[in-house]
Amino acid sequence: MVHTSTAHEVLTAVFQVGDLETRRPRLKVLLWQRAREPQSGRWSLPGGLLRHDEDVTASARRQLAEKVDLREIAHLEQLAVFSDPARVPGVRTIASMNGPWEHIMVPHLNISMPNIAFPITEETVKTVRDSGSELWLYNCGDERLNLGLYPWRVKAGGRFQWHYRYINADPWDDLDGGGSDTQYCLSLPGPDGPVPAVKSQMVREAVDDHRYIATLEQAIAAARSDAKKQAAVAKATRFLEELRARVPVDFRTLVGYQVDPRAAGASVGGEFKNTDALDRVRWAVAQLILELQTGSGGPTTGKGK
Image 1 (cartoon, rainbow, N blue to C red):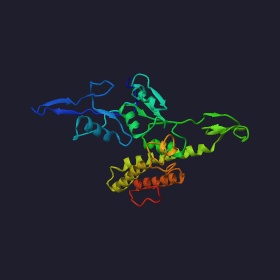
Image 2 (cartoon, one colour):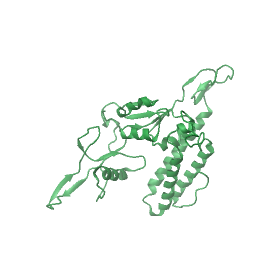
Image 3 (cartoon, rainbow, N blue to C red):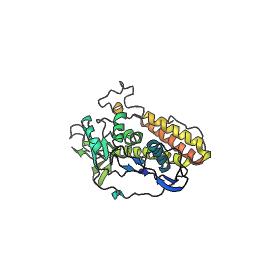
Image 4 (spheres, one colour):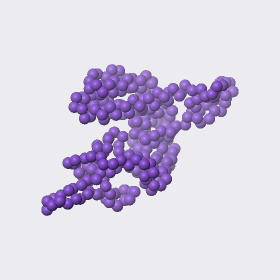
């Protein structure tokens, strides 16, 4: 397919300034032969996508080690940043996917947006990433956990969710409709304009959950070079690893969609069905952020750890 992704990528230019045999000055640049599309078989600078948990320097070192087995580098610095969204020609392709019969679409998409019926599992997430497509999420439930921590758990680049599907009756009259009067509505029509629905508060809480995690990850990255904060860095990193393990990749086990959660060894709704557990996680994250900023390493209170 035409490569049109504008995700963050790192390209490394490795120079050798002397001939190892003659010891005479001679400038050489390291290239590697691409094994995948786009431009399979062509020579290029080694590089690849920047992961969510690494900065540019860490990504450059990983790319060199993985692709050309170069692990000792005398000097590494950032030369330039190219960020124009139009720098890659062509149309970007994106599609939502609602079942396993749509797996064949993935290699042709810049952004793949599966929902829980796709399904989203460790295997399908790996398939999306191995194809060079960016993982986003589509209609994976409208609860606090799957709007907040779940996209972080699977390292999704974005999240689409129905928020105003339809109103099939007067939302203020309990006697005029069959079943639910509204579907996925974050606000309702009022005499003086839109009135926020209760679910809009839950969405805000979910967004804040995600922001707390992102702030903690930024605090970890900022503290890594400070020798006095290594204990706090290790503690926060361990916390995130344990939290990631507590949120399942296959969300069907929580909502009971086509899978019996109990048969999968999980409780119905999971441990975060009670949002008090998410509040405890947030308090734990806030304390870890403060410890990283101050360099202290006191105990994290609550069941958030």
